[in-house]
Amino acid sequence: MPARIAFLHTVADLDESFRAMTADRLPDAQVDAVVRPDLLASTLEHGRLLDETVAEVARLVHEAARDHDLVMVTCSTLGPAVDAVADEVEVPVLRVDTAMAQTAVDGHDRIGVLATLSTTLEPTTALLRHIARRLGQDPVIESVLCEGAFDAARAGRQDEHDAQVAGAIIDLASRVDVVVLAQASMAGALGPGVEVGVDVLTSPSLALDALARLVG
Image (spheres, rainbow, N blue to C red):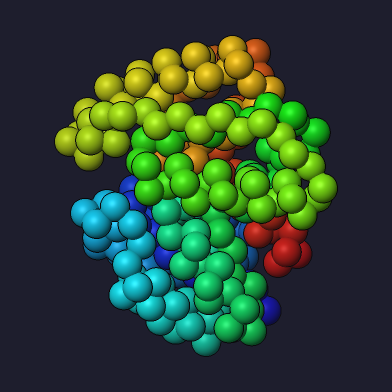
């Protein structure tokens, strides 16, 4: 029976790209998605995850788990809410950034984290530290907020967003062994073929590789 996969997005544009990546890795999979930009908007408005947002994520995950073999939440800002509900359901519930964080910690002593939202920077950095402690490692982690880039993207100025993020990546890469892009929406900022001298990790492809291994 084909795998049944549910995605929870807070950015509508991610639905198409995650469907395409899933089809490439698991062509027979049934893919469903829930898009809830209000969950991210509320978090940005209040500067933190509200209890009601955590509760709504839990409700959505429980609902998706009833009819699917795996649930993935593609918004890193919601990471702590995913952690809170993951053990409550019988199917795997994945954070989009876990595989990326594991790859970053593996063999790297200096990790740079770049985000366009402060509400994403903190949970991504915390995830890296948690995985490093679990593996008995103690990397130096430098976290950088690319201010203004998210507002540019939200206003439809994607080229401006990408230019700001690319510049921040190049600057951060001069001081670290690997750069972690905290949000799935940042994945295309550098453009194809651009080299910065260190690995630049983005969550979507690594997350889908992990999902495919798990389903397979």
